[in-house]
Structure formats: C-alpha cells, structure tokens
Length: 379
Image 1 (cartoon, helix red, strand yellow):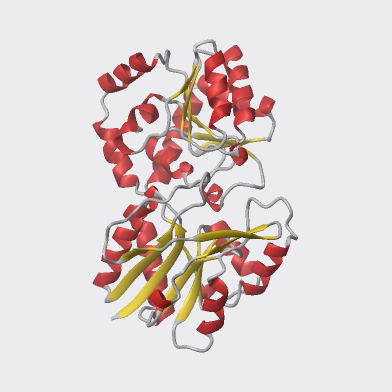
Image 2: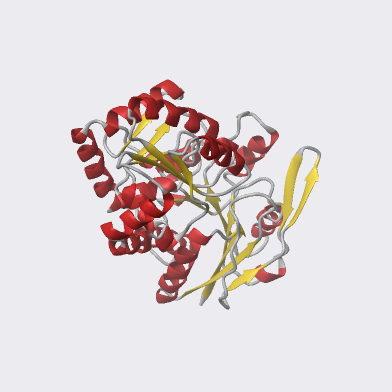
C-alpha cells in the first residue's frame, strides 16, 4: 500500500473533517494517509488543534527570524521516509520544503505543492519570497491548487495543466447544514433576547480578527448603514489580535454586539438571524459558509483576497463593491431594503452551496493523488 504524507504547518479546526474523510477515501483506494502538523506562533491565527488519531502526528514547529523574514522548521524528515508522495504547502518560509524538494529528485518518492500559486496578501509582488516561489513552482511532480484562480496562476507559469488538481477548497458544509437545520426560530429569538440584539436587519461578521480583515473600515460602514436603516444591528463573531477594535466599538454603540469566538452548534443561531455576511477585507473560506447558511456575502474589490474569492459571482450569490466605505455601506443598505435582491442572492447561495462541498473537495484531492501516483486516469 502506497503511503501519502501531507505536511501542514498548523491544523485548524475546520480541516479536521476533511482529513478524516480523505483518509477513509484513500484507504478505499488502497492508499495510506499520514498527516504531519505543528502549532502556530503564539499570538497568531489560525490556531492549531490536536487530532488524536494514530495516522496524525504532531511536531513542535520552531519559529525564528532570518533578517526581516520569519522562518519555520518542521522536524519531520524521519517521518516521511518510505513515502510515495509528500504534499507540502507552497510557502517559502517553511524550511523543510527545501531538503524535501532536493531529495525528491534523488529518490523514488514524489513531491507536490498545495497552495495558491502566489501570496495573495503580499503588498509587494516582486519580493524575494515571491521570486523563490517562481523558481520552485515547477519543481514538483503535482500541484493541488486551492481554486480555479490558483490553478490558473500555476498554469500561467508554464506548469502542465494535466498535473494540476483544482481542489475547490471547502469546509464541512454537512455539519453546518445540520446545525442550521436543528436551530429553531424559538432558539434564534431566545439568543437575540439574551444578547440584546434587536430587529431583523442584522449584519454578521464571522472570522478571525486581524489587520487584513479591515475591521475599522467595517465599523465605519456599519455606522453609515445604521444611519440609513435605523433598525440595523451588527454582530461580530471571532477572535484575534484586532479584537480590541470591535470591543471598543461595541462599548460605544449598543446596536453592535460582540459574542466572542464560536464554532459549530453555537454559531448556528447567529447565521440564522443574519441577512448579510459583512467582510470588506480578506475573504477566504467564509464564503462557503455564507452559501450554506444562505446569508449572502458582501466584500470589496481588493487584491488581498484568498483564492476562494473565485466562488463569488457578484450580483448572483453575493456582492463585491469598490473598496470604499461609501460604496460598501450603500450596497448593504440597498440590499437590506430590497426584497427582490435578497431573494435573488439567496437563490444564488443555494446553487453555489450544492457545488462547493467537502465531499467534492475530498474526491478532487483523491483523484489528484491517484493520478500523481499513476493509479488513476489522467485528468
């Protein structure tokens, strides 16, 4: 039985279901999966969780700086011996990638990148790190690209399209669907009463809280929306180094509510009570949750979005505005006052939720692994 090893710097809670499902699917195909993961640097997100499975091995990441650049050493070289395929994240700061890339040319084991093709959040497109990415982008046997946008970036570098798998990155939408289905109107009303959340024109922010999420922008936009729609309320879910920005705003305005970091069943009432998901800054996997919850996402046209922004069809399943507070707040206000627009965007969310699922993601990755190992038909 061939062994595949996937190395992740951290293991966020939303990846647990994916790796469990992937292992089962690969076992059905006669392939053994080993997962190696570490922990985040203190004070950063996403946070890593522990997976108590015999096939998942946790290592202690070592963080240090070389000049202005942060580097990470993942002590796992001995753990990958005898592996037919090693899948690593395409990140120049992950030092273990370099010996693995060098050794892959001298052994029978193959190596693949999992990633975006480039750093979508980097302000300087011609940085030293991006130059390294350009040099190494074609030095692997296979590519697992997050979305069609990532696949296009990799292909535009000259890498063969036949060796690129479009993963269609997603979360476990089944669990979220179950939680939403189990959440009654009575529960939603009770949560609103307990939290002091009034009205039905509710905008939700749900995610990590750091600079790229543009929280000061969002708070200013919410104030404009409130002036246009007096019954508007804003709910903030999440945690991170910029949490204080939200906490300070909530302390000044009683129509803003910070409920902390919530997951799973606890999160369902807040999606159920909300009309719009407000994320003017970086958008990633939250867009998949917006589809499943039928809460259209509103964002702005910025170059920092993660590849999952490719799922947004502005005007059909969400809205992307110009990157100004005026444009963003005006779009949200118009939506909250337009029943036809709400109906159209919600219908778009329903269609998209049927496509971007963890089941499809597992199948895409499984097929890519089989093709890389020569077990399946070429894509």
